[in-house]
Amino acid sequence: MIKVLGQNYYIDLDEVEKYLDMSDKSTDKSTEDKDSDVSETKINIIKFEMVKMLMDTVLTENEEVDENLGIKSSSNTSIPFKLAFNSLLNKKLINHY
Image (cartoon, helix red, strand yellow):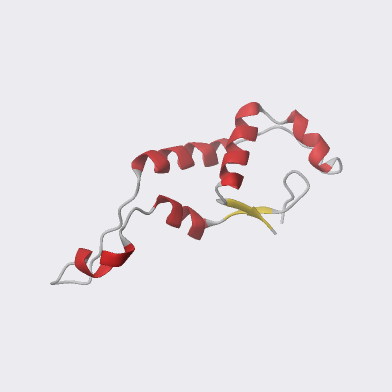
């Protein structure tokens, strides 16, 4: 596992799915097709695009970070990376072990 900013972080895919899902949980049975076992998943397209851009920013950051400095080395990261990382961390889409 690779450390990021002094800790091990991961993208919680289950939490991303819950965050984007707009399906009404109480009417899951009514949204299923009666003839087949097909169900629809509705997502908020604005949230989807924002999460996609934020994750892209985090995953494509190419600033060399000295892992020995830990959190002190975070001053070398770009402003878009900091905003994206903090936004995803705030929404619990990125977690640490």
